[in-house]
Amino acid sequence: MSHAPGAPQQLTRKDFETGLEVRWCPGCGDYAVLSQLQKLLPTLGIARENFAFISGIGCSSRLPYYMATYGMHSIHGRAPAIATGLKLARPDLSVWVVTGDGDALAIGGNHFIHVMRRNVDLKVILFNNRIYGLTKGQYSPTSGFGAVTKTTPLGSIDRPFNPVGLALAAGATFVARSVDVDLEHLGGVLRQAALHKGTAFVEVYQNCVTFNDGEYRPLTDPKVRDENRLLLEHGKPMVFGKGRTKGIRFNGAVPEVVTLGEGGVAEADCAVHDARTPGTGAEYLVAQLEPPAFPVPLGVFRSVEAPTYDGLTDDLARTARERMGRGSLDQLLRGRTTWAIGE
Image (cartoon, rainbow, N blue to C red; front, top):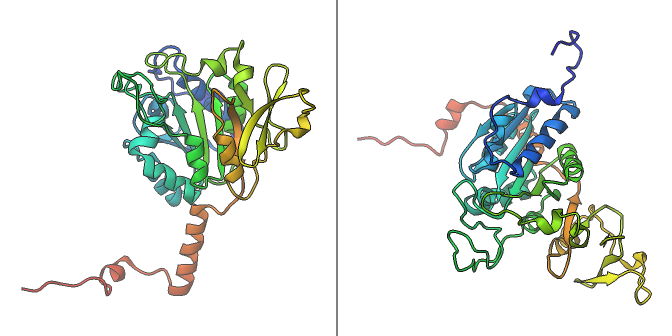
């Protein structure tokens, strides 16, 4: 694309398409996330060479191949660690982590919680299809209790992780959840994540058409979805249902579903969502709302400002240089903590 010398290049979606054949099953929810990212990135005012996508292992982790940016298809579960190193070395880059429920929460569980608590300026997208798709249908850390899979033919006896709850418990500064087929909602959540300074975590409920088809149908079927999902908006009451006739109210820490207009209950009696509270306790309670008793919350659970790990690291390095000079590698290697072994 030609542009005037010295003028910022006007990027389009096509600038982020590689032209490679996308190797996901027809109907896979991964296509929707890829499409929304290719639509979003040109609008951020960031040069294409300043984006990097780091993935682990799994179906979702193929995404860097399909983004015309820098990237790396890395090691199973270790994408957050590699992305952290990249961000520390090149703080000017916009670094994205692409992972799946198995990659992030099984072998990568420790890396996941530590990148959340450190608040590294990364954007982490977790594709959650509640199954191991690439390795052909084993249960994953988010598969439901009783889920029948190739490795749990009599039903899983594991209690599943709640990725949003886990991220909040680890102190993440931006936590959100969306669903693959709601493109407007997904695009809006990804935009907010992209603009956040710090670790921005987005869980995407994503359909595996081959090994776990229909897992999220209650949230995507237009006939029933309004009754099964709660769209979170900062500063707005938690109201849901067809015609917005139901709401969420908390008695202390205990939630309950109320029907508006019944027994004098009004919208003003419902809990108001606050994504900007200093702690994570209130958002964590919202994250615990699960079917069948409650609708599934979608949207931004938390969005707060806090110092970033990469920013603090830069400050620390600057302070060290001011106090002790730039130092030398040779001096470090020959310092008091090394010794020679003679004959």
